[in-house]
Image (cartoon, rainbow, N blue to C red; front, side, top):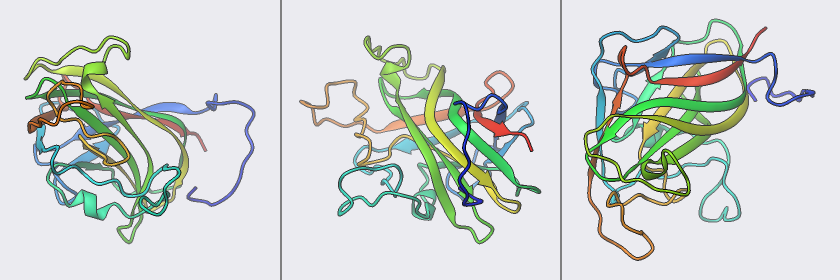
Length: 235
C-alpha cells in the first residue's frame, strides 16, 4: 500500500525491519483531530495526561477496516475516518509530514499506560495514513479488554484509578507512508459493531444490560512513556 506495488519476501516478520517507537505527546487535549496530540520518536518528559468519557450507549462507530461477511451493513476496506475523529472520546496523535517515503511492514503494537474509573473497560488503537488532502485512511486496528490484560483465561477486574501498563496488539500492516503523508494513532474505548461494546461493569454481557460510563485516561510522561511500536523498513 502507498506505492501500490507487490513485493515478495522470504520471511515474516521481515528480519531487516527495525522496531521503532513513536511516543505519544500532548498538553492534555488530544481529544479529536482538532486537539493537540502528536507522535514523534522523541521520548516524553513532563506532560499532562489525556482523558475522555466512554459511554457504552454512544460507542465510536466502525468505519471500514478488516471486516468480513456482511458488506450490506458494514463495508470493509479503507475509509476516511474523519467522522470518528471529530468525537471527544477519540484521542488523536499525529506525526509531522514525512520528508521521504517511509515503509512500515510487520506486526504493530501499542505500549500503553492507562487507567479507568470503572472496574472494566476496553482500549482501542487504530493506525492511520493521513494524506496531504486530509484523507485519514485506516490501515490496521486492535483492541484490549482490560480484565484480560494479563490472561485470556483468568480475567481480573481493574482497580479504578490505578495505572496499568498494557500491550495492545494492533495486528499487522504493510504500507509506505509517502513523502508529505503523516502517520496517525487513534485511541478510544470502542469500535462498534466490529467489536462488542464493553459495558464497563465487569458483568457477563450476555446476561447483563446494565451500563456505566467510564472516564479513561492515557499517560505519556517520562515515567509512563506510552508509544506506538512500528516495524520500519530501512531504505
